[in-house]
Length: 299
Image 1 (cartoon, rainbow, N blue to C red):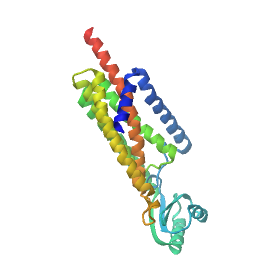
Image 2: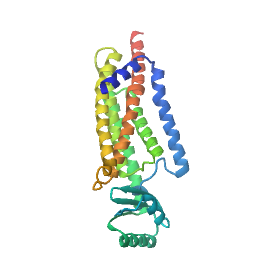
Image 3: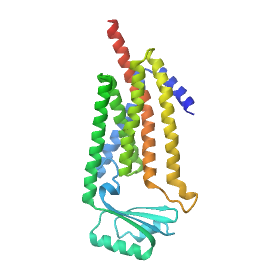
Image 4: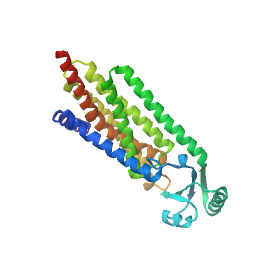
């Protein structure tokens, strides 16, 4: 599979000039920015905030009632989401008063068996928002500093940074489109995307800038290694997503593992974006940089 993909991608890169290669990932990046901007204006956040960041109550109970009937049953409370997971139902409620929360907990525990309740206050959720944002910013700045120290040249270092940034923006836009909540798990996934992106970009830059041979030959060699790495990781993530999301269809004793499901799907979005940003955007910038440097030396 990865061999055919690598050959097609290599052929595509060879047959298009630098402007044409950069146009597709840059257009996708701009569309992603527009999506996040619209989401921010309409809701106050670029992606849907999960319970960890917004506050609320999550209740899991053993029941055979459908999600629709449960949503109607608890419509007097600020119910946000209801989903079935095998023999259990998971209900998520937004922030509410202590009195209303106490009534909800009593009603649920009196009605259902094997009840699990998770509560997070809005103040704690706001503090977690700031911590998560700081973690992403500090990680990104640290990555940028290390990359500049490695290559000590602005253009190749900028290519790595802009590719990683684009990966995160595109992954966040997909989260917004598909309604995937920003949780502690998805924040971890976004941080992992930075690592995956830098890994493939540094592989490409090192092969092109520090090895003998023509730039296109070095790009092709790096592509065979990098695409194999990425597609192998993608295959594992697809399996993890299927197992964590749909295993309850095989047996009622299994339930959906929401944390792993969200992490895997966000990483899938990010790695697909990384294929475009590394082997089209970063490649086009490197080819332009090497050609320009060659002209200067000849002059």
